[in-house]
Structures are given as C-alpha cells and as structure tokens.
Image (cartoon, rainbow, N blue to C red):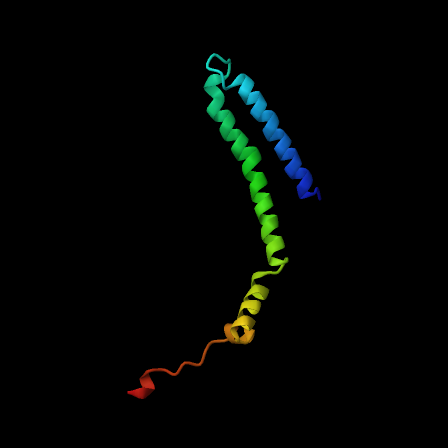
Length: 101
C-alpha cells in the first residue's frame, strides 16, 4: 500500500504542473485552448484536488478516533455519562401508561 504522504505529494506536483500548463495554454485570451479553460479547471479539481482531500480527511478521521469503531466510541461516551454501555443496547423498562388508568 502506498503511503498517503507520497500520494499527497504526487497530487500536489500534478496540481502545480497543471496550474502552470493552464496558465500558459488556457489563461491568455488569445491562447489556443482558451475556450477549454473551464473544463481544465474542473478536471483539475475533480480528478486531482478533491480525491486527495477526501483521502486526507478519512485519514484524519481515523487518527482522531484512534481507529475505533462507532460502538467503542459510544461506550466511551456512555461511561462519561455514568451509564453502563449495555444499558444503551437493551430496551428500557418504562412502565406503560395503560396500567395507571
């Protein structure tokens, strides 16, 4: 598995090179590919920048939660609240209102 650092570096290099190429071939009004500038920008964002941000955000979420799943996170919150984690999974015994009539 390739590291996220290498992927991020490669994405950054591709984005910078694409930015320079776009400045040369797309940006000037008399440039040959000026009419395609919007497509170039969208492809750069959707194919390079956005996927890199998604990968980085997923990794940050994994680091922030310590690799725990949702169940262990719920248990930690329950312990802080002074509730046993098994009380969250079993139905509560609330008396019915029919017996009081």
